[in-house]
Structure formats: structure tokens, C-alpha cells
Length: 525
Image 1 (cartoon, rainbow, N blue to C red):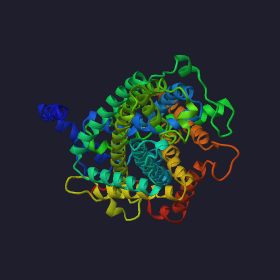
Image 2 (cartoon, helix red, strand yellow):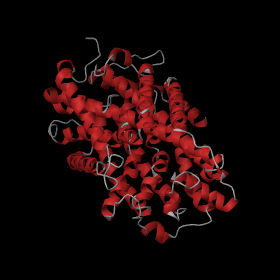
Image 3 (cartoon, helix red, strand yellow):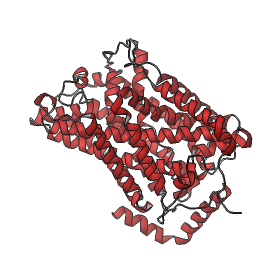
Image 4 (cartoon, helix red, strand yellow):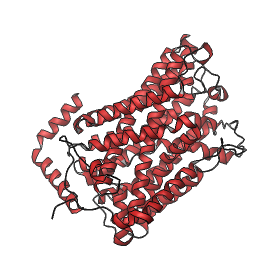
């Protein structure tokens, strides 16, 4: 609370400076063609906090820990993370440069339109926008579904674990958890922005402190610790999936890192609510990635020192039912105290981080839906674009929660279908990140007018590296993850992402090209 008070006090100290900054923000927004409709209340720290809690290393790394262990084990995590982190930072730097030039809630699709000019702008904007919004919905789906799954694992462990007749929730119970979590997120996101700003900063602090507590506590409590040699050199090739090539295994394990480091476009979607947005938006993108890389690496190192027997952690017959990180936490406490309660409490710390992560993700989704419908790109656009008396795009909030719920319903049919949906979360979103960067280094190479934050003469080089990295991961994460290939083991990522591409292109050819003109001004002449 003191933090909020300090921020409030700071704001009272310089009312004139504040007003100047806000009026220059509003006039910049006017130049870009929009009137200020959302409430501009977020400081640089608040903008960073929202994004940091979406990137949330606790969420991403804890829920995909099993992927890292399966494909390569400790080596993939310890070395894969900084590699992916640095390349992600390159993507972030390019995005930040463009964000500084065009600080609007639409973010990526608006950038694509402006960078492509009048001829190709509408198509570029249409494709980028749909990949971004569907990718974001998939992110929210996967975050909240992973929380529902984690709650189920916590209940299983609390009732005695899998080997002592613990309660294993059915997939229908898990989907009810998922619906309940989304409902809470929609309610919180219907509150005025200053509440969200407070929750966002609380979330960032929780993520930060939570990582440090867990990375120190878990290896300290564990009676069996891994040697440094194991952590830094052990390569797990025993994945039971028929994949034997070491490089191939390493590459598949990178998904854990890349899935975690997504969602930092949130800083751009919050720019119409952020003061001095053309500087603080870019700052939010870069700092959230940079700090996540450092904190995440500490978390990986801390937890992997408590990993000794990889096949057992992944075994479906262990107490946590094969949920690797839960088993690590549970065993650490059980081995020392004879009871795993402490481990369940630690999982609770992760669960709260995931809850905040989903909450901020819905915020980001709704701002994107608000902007996209403001430009008439969505069916029933005028309805989704409505803002309530607290200047919150309330219909867009509930739409985002509803769609994320529907996307999770596929898990009742088959986990294969569900995983395909989730794969859009990484690849679909990254394609939306790369498109405006690609246009910036090609069509707009000469015409791009940078904002106050820019990479100077390195802009083009950094941009090309970013585009190449996204092209590489799009291929890597579409590769089969198990052999021999059957319809159970097929990687449906290219099907899901290709399907999305085909639908958006067909919608464009048969309908949208006649009426969607890219971003449209909403200022009355």
C-alpha cells in the first residue's frame, strides 16, 4: 500500500509536468488518428508490472518444467534459457523501437498498417491483427488451464497423492476450475484501471519475491541435491518418445523457454493508458524481458539443483501423477520432514503467480480487442469497442474471457486438439510480433520515422535477426516431438497455425478487403 501512496504523492508533486506529459500523449494519439477514450493513469512502473506479470517466469517455467526435463533435461534449461532469452530480447528491442513511433492500444496491427503504406497496409494490418488477437486468446487459455491443472495436482497431493488414493479430478472438474478462474479474471478486469494498476504491481512483486524464495528454499530443503556436474553437464536422452538425435532433443526442449518469454506486447497494448507512452511503452517491453531473463535463470538453476532422478519425476505413477515441478517440491519437503505440506504451499505460491499472469493477460487481450474493433475489424465491432463510465472496455473484457473458455473446451475432446490451440500461443503470437518488424526492415526501411526510443543505425540489423529467429522457431516448434508418428503423436502446430492463416486469408479475399481499410480515425472532423 505504501507503494501506491508514494506513487499517488509523486503525482501530486508535479501536477503541471504530469498534465504536460499527458497532453503531449493525447496530442500524439490525435496525430495517429484517435481520440483519448481510456483513462491515462499508468506510470512507467505500472506498465512494466503488467507485462512482467504476463511474461511471469514462475508461470511459464513451472508449467513447462516437464518439457525441459523430457527433452534434454538440465542442459536444455540451463543453456537454452539464456540463448532463447537473448534472441527474445532482440525481438523485444525491435518491437520497442516501433512502439515508440506508434504508441497506440492496437499495437502490432496498427504498426503493420503504418509501415506498409496505403496499398498493402490494410492486408498487413488484417493478418497481423488476427494472429495477434487469436494468439493472445490462446495464451490466456493456456495460462488459466495450466492453473486449473495445477490446482488439480495440489488437491491430488493434499489428499494423499496418486499412490495413496488421492483425489484425481476428472477433465470435467478441471474445465469447471478453468471457467471459475476466467470468471474471476473478467470481474477483476471490469474494475477501474487504478485497481488493475495496483494488482499489476502486486503481481510483479509476487513474481519477483516468489522466484527468489523458491529458488533458495527448494534446494535448501531437499535432502538429495544434484551435483554441479549434473546440473551443468547432464543431458537427458531418455525421453521415451523415440527421439535420439542430441541436437534435435535440445531444440525441442527450447519450447519451455520460448513459451515462457511471450506476452510482452502487453506494454504496447497499454500505451493509451500509460503516461509518456512513447518512452515508457518501449521501456516496459525491454525491462520485462531483461529482468525475466535474469530472474528466470536463477529460478532454473535453483530448482534443477533439487532434481536428481529425471525419469522418476516424469513417471505418471509418482505422487503428483507425473507433474514434474510439483513432484520436485513435494519430494523436497517429504524427504526432510516426512510430509509434503511445505511443497504444496510452495505450489500455492506458483498458483498465485499464474492467477496474476492470467489476470494481466485478460487485460492485454481486452485492450487489443478494443482497438481492433475500434477499427472495425471484428464482427459486431461497435459492441466490443464500448467503454464504460470508468473508461474500461468492458465488453471486450468479457468477450476475451468467453473465447478463452471456449478454446479450452477442446481439452474435453482430446488433449491433442487442445495442445494445437496452445501452440498458437507461442507461434501465432510470434508471427504477429515478426510481421511489423519484417515490414520495418523491408518496405519501410527508408520511410520509418523513429520515436524517442530508437536503435539508430542498428535498427535494420536487429530487425533482421528478430525476423530470422521467429522464422527459425516457427519451423522448430512444428517438428514432430515423438516417433513413430501417429495421430496421437503428430505435432499439430502447423495445422493450427496454417488453419488460422487460411481462415484469415480467405476472410480477406471474400469479404474483408471490400470493407476493412486498416486503422481508421475516430476523431470527428
